[in-house]
Length: 394
Ligand code: PLP
View 1 (cartoon, rainbow, N blue to C red):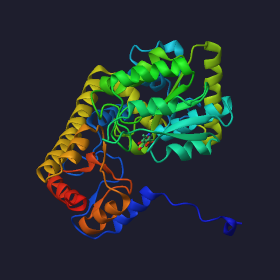
View 2: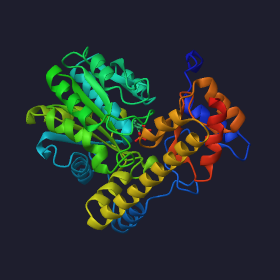
View 3: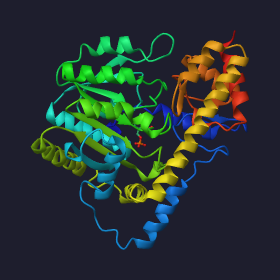
View 4: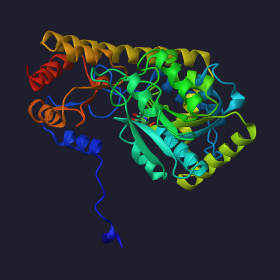
């Protein structure tokens, strides 16, 4: 049987990671995957997480099954954190998922069950897994542009292209720190997008994976909260992988906002049914950690302070890289980089130049030009800037 399997497409990101692992040059620099690293290159367990784990270990008496929706405290506290006062709790249904990816898939399944074959508009470029996840659920993907010629958010272009979205279409928007570009709508742009969603009847589907890493949590959640307050139906996929550092605990939440209680009850059952056929129940540990942090004032403060520290390091890394590129005679690239937000930056380099960066300078970013700014240690910035400048030429 197995020989009938056609060669599957390989995953370019994991291929790059494997190439990096096989690279023997001591100066090699891994800026591929979206993982936060501290100045010594480690991805630490956050102190708030460690403390929550200790408390959980002390009081955990059982590893009994949870329900299909996962951890109830998590499902109450995480939406409160994300939505603030933008939407009352009785407008929302939350189901714990296998991280942000699981939330994207469950919500894609929900859309497919509600409107089979529905069109989902996705930014171009997009997070590499958006299209595969949506298509795996049987949805039709239509791209819309995201950046303008200067590398900023293309408000006009986005509105023009989304003008073709029909009532009932879904528009996938990253809530902040757009992956891969680092380019986000401003507050005024979110206002206009919310107005268009209401006027044209499309459903915003927000992917939140980096809140707190571009600006404060409140800054980064502004767009999501605005949509939640203004638009009757909103889908939100929340990941706790990056901002709680729970990458391998696979912790996330599918959040659905609606206006009809009866419809929301159906939504919850549909999400549970989708979960049952995919993986049954989500893993408990990460969700219990997040709930323990969010329900304790002290742990919540500690977590926020750590998140602020991570963001400040990322922001400083980006500023340092931009300043060095400016000093090396590339002010336009420096300005473009300096405006970007979150873990990623997009270098204005085509695939062949990214290959040169890898071959000649041992710097690994994606073929599309994305680099993980959070993966830089302070002493890397000068070398990275020199390598980018060398590839950019004059
Ligand atoms: N959404 C975006 C934009 C991402 O960049 C990622 C991960 O890199 C995810 C969702 C999914 O994250 P996870 O499944 O690890 O929580």
